[in-house]
Length: 199
Image 1 (cartoon, rainbow, N blue to C red):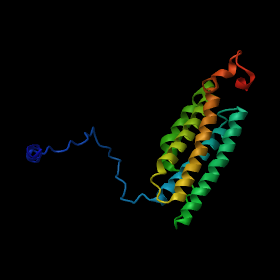
Image 2 (image 1 turned 135 degrees about the vertical axis):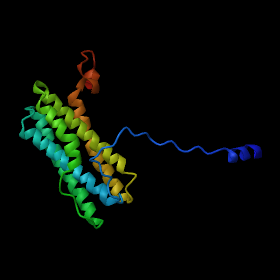
Image 3 (image 1 turned 45 degrees about the vertical axis):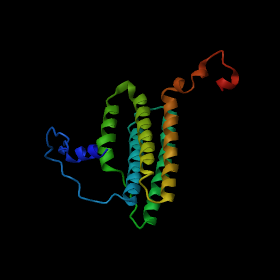
Image 4 (image 1 turned 135 degrees about the horizontal axis):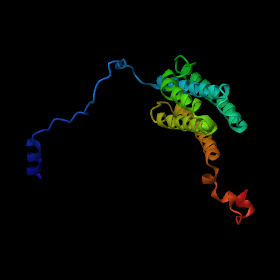
């Protein structure tokens, strides 16, 4: 054991390999050093909520779908997102910060705008694409809240994030059932199934 320890200590240390770079982006500027704390998480969550609300508003205004069920769901979900944003804003204020009251420009410009542009040009598939967009946003929102739970420093904030995240996950589940109902309940169309199973 002593010999192995000695050999290990005498072994020449290899330099750590660096991640290779394939080029540089002239427009890129490293972000200024800033502490990522509870305020940042809460404000970011609120801004994401506003981005989702804005996306659903644009879907309705541009008539990307005429499906009354989907439009009603997007309205209900938007109300939920507004409540979530308000809750994140109130929590931010209780910590002595300033509540976020606007959408997230990065999420909107990098994620939502390109997706809405594709829906604009998708023709007969617009209604299905709207469902997929909403499902993706709700899933991403749920995952976002889940990921910040361990990062938040206060138990009350973690509980709030879990509560909101569970609502976003339920939104995604409802949309998933509309996108592919037979995968969710395969026995629903089984003629041999009993009435309880079918119901």
